[in-house]
Length: 360
Image (cartoon, rainbow, N blue to C red):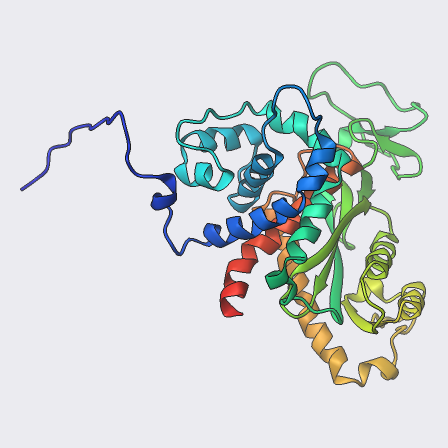
């Protein structure tokens, strides 16, 4: 018998949000791991908030909401609050009951500065990696490094001469700009919208854009990100940031690092060896010069293994830029963009942990 298409608007519900989430849902494992990492950061949160006054929204809930934004490619915080209002899965993950009011979008904007001052993104990434069951998944000997461009939230029309000698902008929100015979460079020009952005391109044949450079350090056992940093988009940013991240790797044992041809630079190879890091860098052999990596390194089987595994770091870069929405940042300034880049790297690790922990 056909049922009636009638509305049943019940006033009460006797099913908990916890019971509506499937037992095998990956967010269950992610929430458990994230909560353990956030518990470890509780002393840091105490330092960031006053001891008296009106209670604020718990920072743990704010960070769990930002994780959902990365997991589900939610393009704005306003849309995040909209989904948090009616999505029971989101409410359960964040820690809100069915009847709890949803915050206004500016709550995240106002609290981001406090979390930025406390360097919470880097601390959260480290806290996840230092959990006992996650630490066993990491390699402490073999790593890979790579950089990627993060497009800035600034248009090319804002890239003007530092001395102000170019033509004044015409009236209107989307005014015209004449770039004919205008030779632009980072030495003479700067963005009026985001002065920290630099004109850069990833490779020859691509257009230059205002951007930052994001850097990732990946361990080679399971492809988890162990360090993430953001710098100005300069020609030497990638090897310099790689050396800084390798220098912070704990332990005194000799390690290896896989990298692409952009790192085949004499200064990087020499500095890496001083850090007791064997550079498994792809050879950049062209008509002008030979490679800085010779047969002393390439003859070992480990070099070929590193060259195969290092390509997995592109998966992390791709997820952070496409799924997590960092291909073009919505923020301005090196500090704000860098905080979000590190947080999205932590989100990438969390999204991979349910399967890795199940296999372990």
